[in-house]
Structure formats: C-alpha cells, structure tokens
Image 1 (cartoon, rainbow, N blue to C red):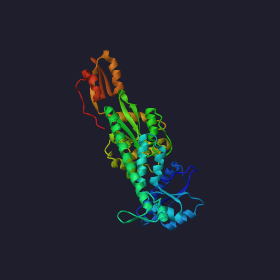
Image 2: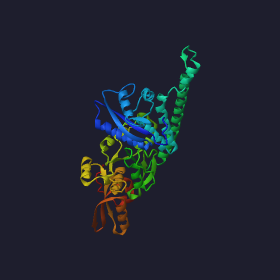
Image 3: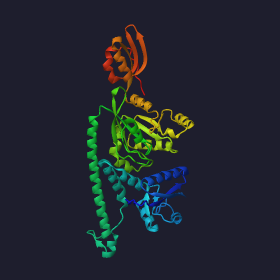
Image 4: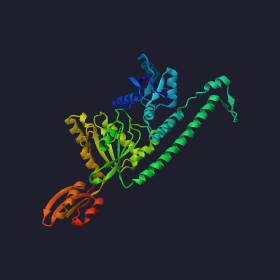
Length: 428
C-alpha cells in the first residue's frame, strides 16, 4: 500500500474510454474518483481520459499519452487510475516515469484504513489490504542478487536472494490472511449469538450509496450521535440502536457501510461480517441522494451489491433523500419516476413521520378487526388509537364499534371485544 503523505500529495486522475464505453459515464467515474482522492487527503490537479480500443497490457494507457499528461503540470506526485491496475502495469509506469502510481481500489483501501474505528472494521480493512497487496509484492531485495550472485536451490534451479525474500514475504502475508480470517469468523460467531438474543425483535437496516445520507437518517430516527461527514465512506462500522414504533414496539435499526459502484469482490468478501447486517434485516431502508446527477446509476450499483451478497429479495423501502436541494418540479418528476419511493430530507426531518408509519406497516402484518368496546371501557378506545390505524368509529347502544388495522401479536389483549367480523389480511 502507498503511504499517503501528510503534505497533501498532488495527483492527476487517468481514465480510459473504450469504444463501447459511455463517455459520460467515464467522466462521472473520474468525478467520483476525485471525491475519493479528496477524502483520502490528496489534492487533485485534474483528470484526463484517453480513447482506446483496448487497454495497453504494459501501461494501461499509451506511453505517449502519459508523457503528455506529465508534461502538462509543474509537479505531480501521483497518477491515480480509475480502474484497478495489474501489478506489472503499476511497476512499469513507476519505472518509466518515476512517479507514484495508485488505482481506485488502493484509494478506497486508504480511506477504509483511515476511517476504521472498531476492532472488527480494522480487521476487515487489514484483510482487504493484504489480499490486494499479495499479487503486487515487488522484489525489494533484488539488490542482494547483484551483490552476492545467485544461489542454487536443492532442485538445482538458480534462485536469487531477492526471489527467496519475496517468497518469505508472500508466505507471511498468507499466514496473516488466514489469521485475520479466523478472527473474523470468531467475531461473526459472537455477533450471531447477539442476534439470537434479540431475534424476537424486528431488524431494520439502512443501506445506500456512500454519502447518500445514511448516518444523517440514522441520527434523525434515533437521536443518536453517529459521525456525519460530507465524505465518502465516513461510516465503516455498523451502528445499532433501538427504534420505537407505534404501539410501543421496538425494532433494531442499523446503519451500515456505504456501497459504491464496481466495488472489488475482495472488498465485499472482507466486509462480509458487516454486510451480514443487511442479510439479517427484516426490512431495508434504501436511501438515495436524489440531488446527485448520478442517482439512478447509484441505485443500480446498490442493487448489484445486494445481489452479490444474496440480499436482492429483501423487503425494501426506497427513500429519495436531500429533496431540500430540489425545486417543486424536480420533486414532482422524481415522485412520478419512483411512485413507490418516499421523498425525504434526513437533515431537515421532512416526511420522517410518514417513514415511521411505513416502517411500522412493513415490519408487521396487520389485520382488520371490529371491536365493540363498552362505554365504561373508554380507556381501551384510547389504547386502540395508540397502537392501531383506526378506520372507523361508530357509537351504538351497547358500546363503541371500532374498526381497526391491528398487528396480530396485539390482538390477544382485545380478543374478548372482537365481534367476529375479521376481515382479510392486509399485504404490503
């Protein structure tokens, strides 16, 4: 891994637009990479895109293109590529141009490293770093070969000291990977025990593209004090709080790591224990930055990650966030495009009352009942208004007839007043 310097290194971003690629998408990818770099403490001087028919096997883009880019700036500390480079491409570019090279995955890993707070997050980040580093180890000890000559191994094959040291380094990394994987298994076992203890309580998980407003929504719903920053991947650790719904029922609400387009598979694998919160949830709140020009792409990226981790069929509520940044025609167009979505502002609390109601009705299956409450039991009518959706209230000689949508788990408390006119179950 590169060491991000404290004095804010100056970098230029490099992207490739292949013939079949969408040029606007390539540019959007570089704009997002610029935000990632800024979050990692890097000053971005600009970005450049080369149109190519295929990737250059040696240097990803053409040497002449890189010469022209470097010549256009007084001082460049680093070239950052929008796609993951092969180890030989990184080595070749560094060797040819004597400039530090990083790719998008490496920048994401650096951000993860900075933002990891808990032991679980640190273990997951370290595992992802090692998996990334393993094929990229350089022969740092090759100078020993030149100084001492080559040494023949037991097989008779000439083996240099640098090659031996490289194998030692790889063996150490593989051992550490196994150790970290074992640690994560133990952490997952502990979390499974905790989940079983609260399995009677419903679980709701906030998901979404990074910087969509997950932590802001979490704070607004639970009055928590989770870190909120206008940075990508500000949250890596799952934070859990109780959320009280109508009728005094509680659910467990979790705020999780943000998703991002084209997240490398090994990063998803490393964060399996954190993403398990998503798989275990009864309901997902998919929050979207509706003020972003790329919100549709971001929705699709989140859906792809859900599919990769096996959570694509989870029940979801789509939340179109940051509507305070939109004018009325934009809001109307957004609602027309996503009629099932709820337009909210997590920061201002707009439409959160409706969200509470939707969570309540999505989490619990409701049935319509008719209760005949005696006049002397007026306190029960008040209770029903607290825990149910009242459809109708009718005064009769023998009492008050209440038609109400009620969670089945609450019915037993009022069963003696049920007049037996049970309706069909309501389905979301």
